[in-house]
Image (tube, rainbow, N blue to C red):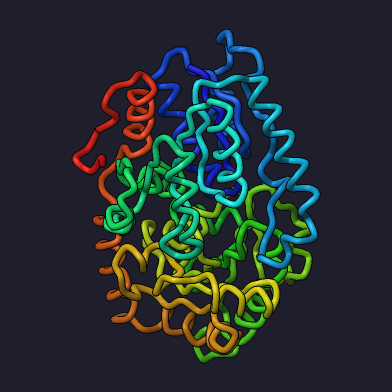
Amino acid sequence: MKYYIIAGEASGDLHASNLMRGLYECDSKASVRFWGGDCMEQVFRQYEAGKESCVGAGKAQDYREGAIMGVFELVGKLGMIASRLRFCKQDILRFNPDVLVLVDYPGFNLRMAKWAKKKGFKVYYYIAPKVWASREGRIKTIRKYVDKLFIVFPFEKPYFDSKGLPYIYCGNPLVDAVDGSPAIQQTRQDFCALHGLDADKPIVAMLAGSRIGEIRTMTPLIIGAATLLRKRKGLEDCQFVLAGAPGRSAEDYEAFDKKMFTLVFGQTQQALHCADAALVNSGTASLEAALIGTPQVVAYRVASKATYYFAKWFLLKCKYISLGNLCLDKLAFKELYSMEDCTEDVVADELERLLTDVKYRETMLADYKAIRESLGGPGASERVAKAMIRCLKGQDGSYTEDIR
């Protein structure tokens, strides 16, 4: 069968690549055209190399070309978005897939769902839009234009049940992505030797986000917090590993002092695995840190005060902004995102506590174990792929008891 997959962010690229692997494994005649990044391209090359692919299979667009951060920052790029939508529609018509698979990225993907459904394409949505957090009105669009909805978090089940919206739940793919990563096998000593770090001194991983807008707004906070932390007693020799985001370059991190920050690319999980603590810019990375077992604090700064207050008053509905805390319905780790709390002093204080308070760390790690248990066992990506294929064949898509 022919699959057209659209992923619009780094996390979507990761999860879509694992889904692609499952589709190739379970459908010997699978051909995929996709919007994504390096992860999806790597899987495509692995499975399509040496076999006769259908015309048009492969990458259609790189997700990094359209990354946007913030409500008001969106306005300046409306023309670019319209152009991408037009190209995507024309490209789908040329490829003529059996199904359009949309991965998260709701601002763009829900528009494509509406168009594709009207054109007669089957529409599957993998990793549901976070309507439980904001923009609940999108449920109407999902109900009307999405044929199958695949969710990945346990706390989403009662929510979608309450809305009467059918779904398929097969667990969370990040469990496999973390447990199967070579990063987990790398020792702290090897990582430190590779990057000129001292394995006997404290290491803090700094994750500034994947979009250029996030990096720019987080840069002053990260530099300020790191500077303050090194002034704390016993932490003068603290080392900072800055995890470069996929698709970014060293130029995007020029503001960081190379003597203080060790910049690494393509090794985010390794950095988390070998660090004593982490400062994470929310998103999927915070859940990765929990599954890897790195004590963390989440800090998130928006691009402008206007965006912050608009989101605070009109958009955000949930108690927490981090997926791990939402899974437990409590604060397993701190979230600093308000204009008052997300400061260099507060972040430095929390990092100091993570590095020095043994009981505090142990409590967090116990909560991490509960987070992992809530996400189900391994094999989620393959189960979703099998469910999609069965649904396309007109069969029952259920592979777990959690299908609705």
